[in-house]
Length: 89
Image (cartoon, rainbow, N blue to C red; front, side):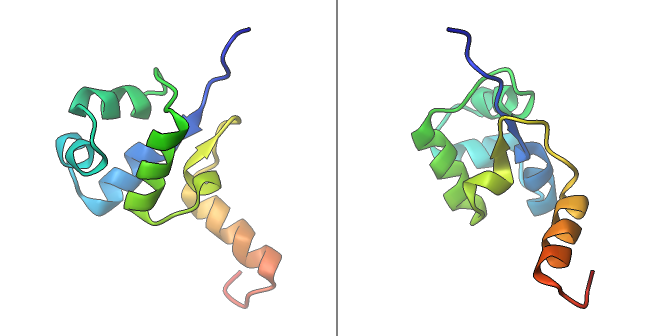
């Protein structure tokens, strides 16, 4: 059975926090090259690794990882606000 590609927002989140691949790798306990593979979606994370990434960024797994291409974060936040009926939408 062919593995599905796992899409993610790791690169965007890392840039937002202004941290290097090496720093993120140290924080989640992997080699810095692994972070690069993840960002380029050349490597699917284990469930444990996906949770470590989510814990580091303090975000739910469905916000960082998906089996479908992810929309830009600004669109996702706007959609969530609109869904809640927020005045900010």
